[in-house]
Length: 393
Ligand code: PLP
Image (cartoon, rainbow, N blue to C red):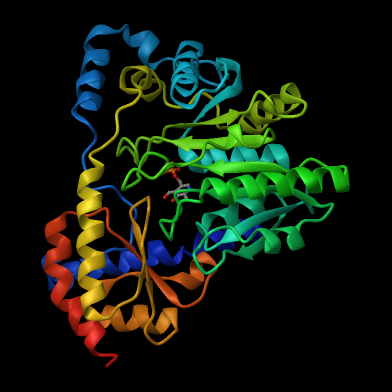
């Protein structure tokens, strides 16, 4: 007997992955330079030089046994202390090594947090559009996803969130900068959310956690500030990853941070450790953990993404394609001229352009373009985008 739910998940690839696979096939057929693949959020900007330099230094200078051996289940204490110091220095926080649990990227941080904070039947609010894996992670826990559409500016719709909260609400996932819209939720928006959650906790006599999913925290443009959620709301768990900030998505390193001001902090942190254990997510990759204290504060060259962002927005505006101006991350949300996301993406495919329909992000009528590619790739694709735009006139 096998678990049919898991079989279905394995058999049914995500639309993003499917498009990526289609792209690979198409590139083999007509040449890679003739396919304009904007499907995946795989950073093209290389990791900062210090990443490779420090990896080499670690390998040359550290004891191989220590470097490649098991760390504590929750991660090396010295590494966690260094990250805690960095958070305190940059965010004016007051966290310690014992608030942190090292993970294989944000995906593991999210599954651990959701496993720690939900019981079967609990509800998790997810502002839409959202990263599609949330649904998989939530449902695996036996919990229920409650999608709540953002407002027309892709900010949190506080009154719609209020309507969705009930005594079963365990958590809300806040992803800012956002995948797929690039929106950064403003301080005003976050303050209003925090006030609502506190009010609802009192009214219902329950605890509602914010799970802050932050792999794009440092990828922001024009000096936009991303509110650090523990500063606004006590019952916050941060899921962080170095996949995008250091361009290390394949290396799988990140962490869960439990705010020290969480109600019943000790139990919440224990539940995080327990979930990590139950899921087999213990001792995140040791070499990568040990790299982190040497690279704290380093970020891949965001100016390249910014250049792509500006080029796309300016050119698409000229072509008559409407876009949501992203303040962060490296995704552009393009409005489907027909109003139908799938129709738009299928038509784009005929021009060899690969973009992802927004329905899979829980919102109709848009396509997501990942612009974490080389600027030349965007320049090469512009005539195809022009033809696509003109096909609607
Ligand atoms: N959360 C969001 C919003 C993402 O876009 C991604 C990856 O693209 C993840 C989580 C998973 O990140 P990681 O590679 O660190 O597991």
